[in-house]
Length: 618
Image (cartoon, rainbow, N blue to C red; front, top):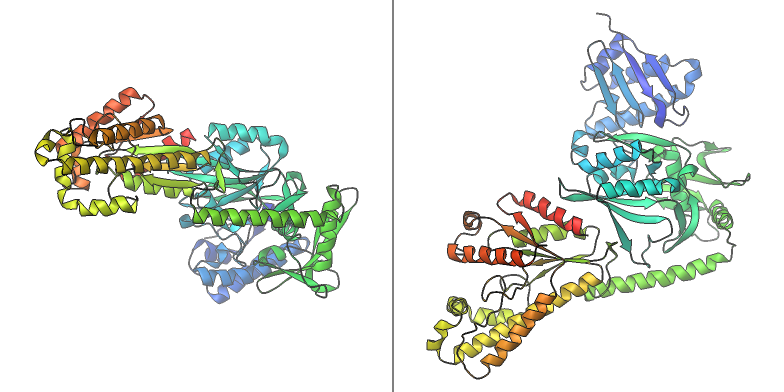
C-alpha cells in the first residue's frame, strides 16, 4: 500500500530559518521505519538520515547540514538513553510524522550536551504543578512579554516546584504580571541586602499550588544586571534585547525560553566581571557544557575552532567575543572580556575607575553575608533569614490531642517552607520533642510516678492532701519550671517571626484549664505547703503573659477517638481525648480566628489543607 508521509519541521527554534516551516517528502520505506517505532539498526539509521538530507532542495543546504549534524548526536543519544534515534534527530526542533492512519508528535531537545534540553518524557513532566499551567496560560492570554533565560535543563524540575524559574519580564508588563500573581495568591519574597542575588530589577515571587501543597519560585528580572557577584549594577539585557525566543513544551505547558545563542551571550555577560586570569594568558574558562549552543554559532574568520558572540549597544557600537569549546565548558578571549566590561560600564554611564568601587563593595557585602551565615548557624534565629515573606514572619501553632499527627505535620510543613524561606519549628510540650536538658533529666527521674502526678493535676489537687508536703512542693516547682520553659519558647518564636521567619509550633500554651493541652500544671486546690501559693501565682502570671503573645495563626486538628487510637494505640484514653476536644471547642468560642482541619484524612491531604491556611496568612 502506498503511504504518503510528510515530515513537518518546525524551525521556530532553529537559528537559520527564523520561523519558517519546511515540508520534506520521504519514501514509503523511510516512513515505515519511523512509524513502526521499533529500534532502528545502525545501517537503517544512516540510511534514514541520508534520505532526509538528500530530500532537501539545494536551497535548503543548511537544513541538510543540520540533519547530518543531528544524526551523529541522535545516534549517540539514542544509545545512551535507550530511545529510537528518530526521537532525537530533530534536536531542539519539533518533528511531526503524518501518516494515513495516525500522526505521531515527538518534541524534545538535543541530548548532545549536558546543558541542552533533553526530550521531555512522561516521567520528566508528570510532576508539573497544575498552577504552572495556569500561570503561563494567564501570562500568554494577557499578552505579557516574558521568557525563561537560564537553567533550561532543569525546566521540568522547576515547573514541578523543585527548582527556580529564571524569568525575564518586559518592564512595561510588570503591572499585568502583578495582577496575575495576585489572582493566583502569589507572594513576594525579600532577601538580605548583602545577598549575592540582590540587585535592582530583580524580585522573588512564589506561586502556591494548593492541590499539591507546593509552590513555584520565580526569580523575576525586569532587566538582567551584571557585575561582581555581590555588586550587580550594570544593565546588560532587557526583554527586547534578546534576539530570539523559542517555545518548548513541558508537561503540556508551552513556555518561551531564550535561544541557545542568546543563552551563551547572557552567560558570558554574567561571568564577564567574575572571570580573571593571568596577564599572559589569552583565554578564560567558563565551566559547563554548551556543545549544542556552540553548534548554532558562526565560526570566527581564520579560526576554525572559535566562534563569535556579538554584543550591540546602540548607536553602532558593538563588541565581539571570541569563544572556543573546551573539555568542561568554553573558553573566552580575555581581551574581548575586558572590552565587554568597559562597554557595559560606559553604556550605563560609568567609567573604568568604577571597577575599584565595585570590588570594594563586593568584598564588604560578601564578608557581611558570610558573617551572617556563620552567626545563623552558631545561633539559629539570631539573624534575619536570607529570604523572608514580603509581609513579614508569622507564628503558626498546631493544636490537637495526641495521635492526630501534629508532629508529623509540623515536620512536613517546615520542610516545605524551608526550601526558600527562613522557617523553624518549636515544641511547647513536655514529651519527646526538643526542650531544656534540665527539664528532660528531671522528667526521666520522675518517670515512674508520672501517672500519679498527672492524676493530682487533673483532679485539681484533691488527691494531694494525703501525699504530705514534699510532693506538692515538688509538683509546684515542676509546674513553674515547665511554665518558664514554655514562656521562653513562646518569646523565641515571636522573636524569630519579627526577624522574618515562618515559625511552626507543635502545640501552644493555654490558661483555661489545668493539665490539658499544655495548660498550667499547679492545681488551684493544692495543699498549703510553704511556698506553694507563691509558685502558683508565678505560674499563673507566666501563662497570662503567654496568652497575650498569641500566634498569628492557630490551627486545630480535630477528629474522633478511633483515629487517635488507630495511630497511637493506648497513648490516650477516650475520656482524655474528649476532654481535650471540649477544651479546643471552648478556645475556638473565645477566638473566632482559630481554624479547624479534619485530621481523619490522609497525612498528605491534611498537609495540603494546612499548607493552604498558612500560605494565605503570609
